[in-house]
Image (cartoon, rainbow, N blue to C red; front, top):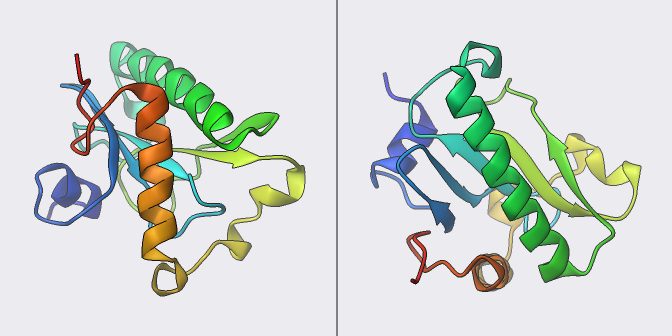
Length: 142
């Protein structure tokens, strides 16, 4: 059965995309630690990041660097958090989020999906896309 992320990638479930290419996508987490919390996900459904082929792993991290810089600039924070947890969805994903202190890495304090503000989520996606130069589908606007 396809993971929830595979269903998002194929368009069967909605998401706020900020980046997309043939190897990976990035969209906002529905349970963010902070608004701007983005997931970088390979298109190929691979459960554990340690099972990714080296080229995909390298690409995911190159994209994470670019998105991490965009998040940091969009939110004027000193850092972008980077976490690979991998227990909630069996599909490799990197968590990126604006952060100012270590306490913000506490996933037990994440917003519940039903408690997020739709307008704030839309604004977060727009802010990140603006810094990436991507459209609502996550593609470059070149």
